[in-house]
Amino acid sequence: MKIRYQSIWPVIIVTLVAVIYTSCSDSELVNNGEPMVKYIRVTDPVSSDSLLVGAFQSNLVAIIGENLQSAQQVWFNDRRATLTPTYVTNTSILVTVPSEIPKVITNTVTIVFANGNTLVHDFEVKVSAPTITTMKSEYVLAGSVATIRGDFFYEPLTVTFAGGVTGDIVSIEPTLIQVTVPEGAAPGPIKVKTNFGEAESAFWFRDNRNIFISSDPYTGWWNEGFVVKTAGENDPPLINGNYIRVVKTINAWSWLEVAGGPPDAMGPISKNIPDDAILNPAKYNLKFEVNTKKPYNNNVIKINLGLKNDFNNDEYRWLPPYDTKGEWETVVLPLETVMEKFNTSVSTNGYYTRLLFHGPGDLDCDISFDNFRVVPK
Image (cartoon, rainbow, N blue to C red; front, side):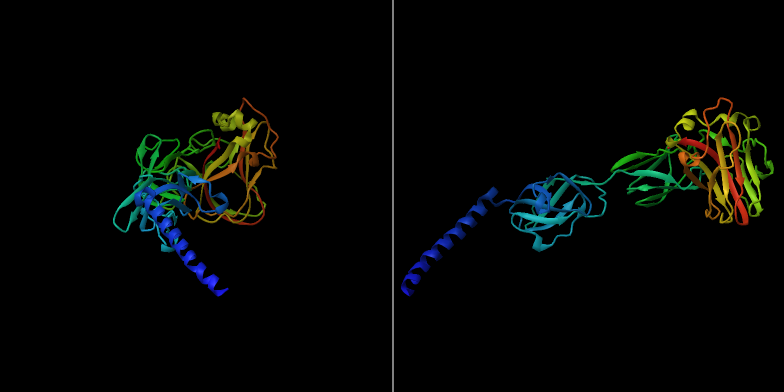
């Protein structure tokens, strides 16, 4: 029995050597031993047939090819990826796309080998184009700093206002831009452009459409004395002509009308709400600018708009708390929510409007308002 086993071993050894030699020879012959990339795919074995021409930041990908074992660096555009030696083999490289945003866009992945040679393969790092959602205040004076909120704000970046003028960037975060408003900025959408695309806001900067309560000039039944025409040292700045400022103690359940009135008292401005907003309020927002030098932390602000025949004491209630800490901000309220309890219809004669304080809790009030308007979402 032992003699039989001993006679078999030489055969096994010769066979293994032949297999190893053949395997090595075959490997050396693939592409003449030169590195090559066949394709890039996802790393999930279940989806291994899902080939990629691009990937988002921080995604793990598998580079599949031949003769890759001496790879020492992998670059996506101008950003170097972190390479783990154990994830580098003859036929594959597992690597994570860098999270840093590229500054130079080549749409390639570059592999650098130990001998200094490089291999370039087409591959896109997908970075979303910017999106614009809101502004802290849609009314900002030239020379002052506007705050724009959204996502995918990456340098280099430009902000262009209606009128074709570009603002000076103060600071950029991925979801927030601060920009100085230039002279010549006009009412209209703003545009944000990066290396990865351009976005235009759905809202308007300095939106002057469909204003139905204004102070330029003040019209209506109540409290013209609340109108600020020239801002003093302790007043909020004028942002669009005159504005309304209420500075007084408002006792619980006292009745303080601030602005508004029936169509014949409001004048032509009472007709500024579009017919389509009355018929399809879900397509519109109620917006206005507010500035609280003292917090709105008690009582209730009630709003009537779009009423055809008379005031409605089930008006929309804008509840506290709200505090802008002495700065102007734009309030955005879905019109379908505001008008949920209003029974109204289209009017050719204008609409009843009212801004009213009436609710529980004493309020030490110092609140300013401007530009009540109904605008498309």
